[in-house]
Length: 473
Ligand SMILES: Nc1ncnc2c1ncn2[C@@H]1O[C@H](COP(=O)(O)OP(=O)(O)OP(=O)(O)O)[C@@H](O)[C@H]1O
Image (cartoon, rainbow, N blue to C red):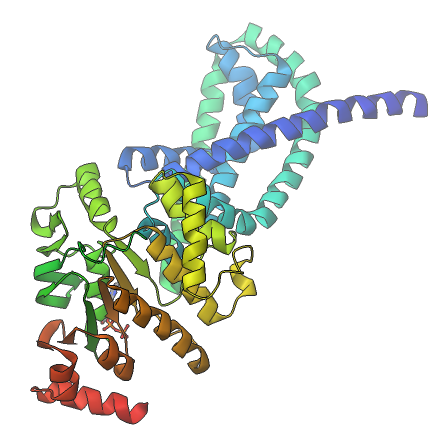
C-alpha cells in the first residue's frame, strides 16, 4: 500500500504546489487590474470588470475548469493540462480576489486620496505609492483565505483534472459538440441564480447602511481671486456666491459657525470640492467652474489649480507607511519630478524650520499630534506652493499641542507666505490675519482687517458668533 500511495502523493504535491503558486500569483495580478478597472470612472471599463467578477463568482469552479478543459478545445483553443489548470484557477482567483482588493482600497481613508491629490500625485502614482501599500494590510487576511481555498481546490484539480478529466475530455471532444452547449447552459443557469442572490444582498446592504464605504515667493506671490462661488451638496446650498481677493503675502482667516461652509470654501480653492459655478484664480491659473470641461480635460484644469497650493488638513493625513522625510519628499520627487537629493536637502531644512529636524527617519505613529501636524505643514511647503491652505489645523489636537502648531503658522505668515486659514482660534486669528472673512450660511457677511471684523464687528451675527466662541474658550 505504502509503496504505491507514497509516489502518488509525491506526484500530486509536485503538481499542486506549483499550480497553486502560479495561479495565485497570476490571479492576484489580474485581481489588481480588475479591481482598479471596477472602481474606475470609465463606465465601459468598470462594466467589463463587473461582468467578469459576476461570471466568475456566479458559476461553480468545476464548471469553469470544465469550460477551459473541454469547451475551449472545441473552439480550437487547446492547452496542455497544466497550463489549462493555471488559466482556470488564475481566472477564478482573480474574480474573487478583485472584490477583496476593491474593498481594501475603499477602506483607505478619503483623506489619504486627498493628501495624495494635494501633493500632486496622479492616477497611477496615487494607487501605487499611497493607496495599495495601505490596502495591502487590509487585504492580507482575506487573501490568505483565498490562498488556502486555492490550495484545496488545486489538490482536487491535480487529482481529477490533470488525470481523469483530461482523458475524459479527449474522449468527449471526439464524441460530440453538444458538450459546449451543455456547459454554456449550465454556466448561464448558475450565473442567473447567483446574480439574483447578489442583487438581494445589495438591497439588504443598502437597507442597513453600507460602509463607503520653498521657494518662499515672498515678493512675487500672487493673489487669490474668487468670484461668485456656488456649491451645493444635493439640495443643500452650501456656498452662495463667494467673492474675495487675497493679496500676495497676506493671511486670510475664514471664521464662521460650524456648517457655515468654511471647509467647503477652502477645499474649493484647490478643487477638492468642485463648485457648480464661480471662478477661482491663483496666480496665472484660473478655473471657471461653470465652464469646466468634462472628463480628462476638466481634470487637467483642476489639477493645474491644485498644483498652485499646498494643503494642511485637520487630520494631518500623513502616509502611515512612510517615514517623515519620505512623506515630505514624495510630492516634489514623484509628482513634480524634481531631483531627490535636492528635494531631500530642502525637506530637511523645512523639517528643521518646523522644529523636527531630527525626526526625518521616524514614522507618523512615533510622533505626537502636534508634531504630525508640523510634518503636514512641511509637506505642504515642500511643494513650493503659491498659496498654503489650512483647514482647521489645530482642531484635532490636544489643547497643549495647539500652541506649537499655531506658532509655526504664524512664522510662515510673517515670512510672507500667502495663506488661507480656516480656524476657530480667535486670538490666533486676530494676531495672524491680514484679512478676515466671516461666513454665515454660505455667504460672506463681513470682510475686513482683523481689527475691523474681530475687534469691532458691524454685523450682529458676527458679534454673536465671537462672543460664543470667546465664552467657550
Ligand atoms: N461631502 C459632503 N456631502 C454632503 N454634505 C456636505 C459635504 N461636505 C460638507 N457638507 C455639508 O455642507 C455644510 C458646510 O460644511 P463645511 O464643512 O463646509 O462647514 P464648516 O463651516 O467648515 O463646518 P465645521 O466648522 O463644522 O467644519 C454642512 O452642512 C455639511 O454637512
